[in-house]
Image (cartoon, rainbow, N blue to C red; front, top):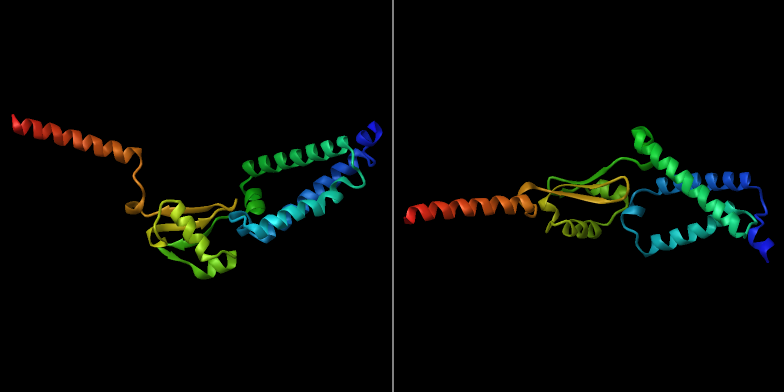
Length: 187
């Protein structure tokens, strides 16, 4: 029993190479699939992600079902990911290559239909994103963009943004000043 749990079946070097290669292949495939897959993980995308993990499993671990082999493969996967993420933070070029650049989906209160089609997004999903971020309609947006990580970022026009703490503090200060003025006028 212990032998089956601990014997990796293939060399650690081969396991490391397999893990790195599969990581890079999946990274390229997801990059080619586009940001939409990250922006809105719907049922279909979830099924693809689950099946994708199962499909590449044997390519990573080979004929190995051991606990130590799985732990080693997981450690290599996490290490490769950490190295790539750190590399992207120091090299803007690598970051653009691996993640892409933001895509503007709406500008000055109007959707850009051709860009939305190319991104593979639905207008209904974008309308929901605008409402989630404080707008009532795209007409209130200065810009809506799909960020490299798949986040939909809505920048509302100045007059359509919700009040923040600074706005409330400014109003309180003005009310206090008006009260002082009224107090002086009553005396």
